[in-house]
Amino acid sequence: MEIAEILFLALVGLALGSFLNVTIDRLPRGESLIRPPSRCDACHHRLGLLDLVPIVSYVWLLGRCRYCDYRIPYRSPLVEAVTSVGCGLIGYQYGLTPVSAVLVLYLTTIIHLILVELEHSLILNSVIVTALVIVLATLPFSPLGHNLGLGETYLHSLAGAGAGICIMLLIYPLSKGRIGAGKVKLAALLGAMLGFPHIIAGLAVGLVGVGLLAAALLVLKSRGHSDAIPLGPMLLGGAASVLVTGTGIYNWYLGLF
Image 1 (cartoon, rainbow, N blue to C red):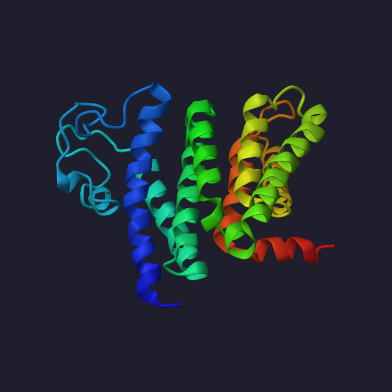
Image 2 (spheres, rainbow, N blue to C red; image 1 turned 45 degrees about the vertical axis):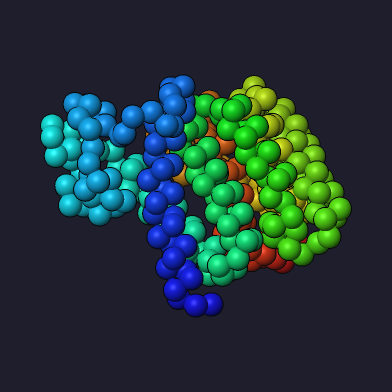
């Protein structure tokens, strides 16, 4: 794989990460993504080009607004860095191809959903519906469509969505009411993205992550048995790991059996 292709997608990831920060801030508040240019959250001063260069501006300004010294959240450069690394890994797996373009769309959607739920405890129906439409439209160019015929691709996607819903319903009794319709819709979306049987590995990685986090928090005594663990972000993280590693995690998961 050519280094230039990986670097190009990593740079695309930086730009997309910057845009993701805008969506994470605005969509939960019902604000438009095409409103007037970005402004500081504290002093509302219009931000210039030098304030908006991904990661570089944060480092150059020492993490503060140049106009009012407001501390910029650590989330901003973190999202940019994670998106860049994820896009670079997709480039490493698939090169500069239509499959990579589709996976970049999926990855950015997942990162948005993770951060919105962590910060606002929301899974926005508008994002789920929009993402599902995008998934269905791009399936022929996804890894599923790359390896299967058109009819098989949509059958595997539909089966993945059904499997995601069934898994959520199976663990519902153990959730004590914490798994609502939002998580079921989320699992259906991830199943449509990954297809069957890859959704099994994606959700399994997420659920193992939930268990490990719960055990760690109990050991550290930072949470009690009744405290909520962020299930949605963990499931999304599991799906993202399958997306960016191709069949690697799926084959590892099968190897356990």
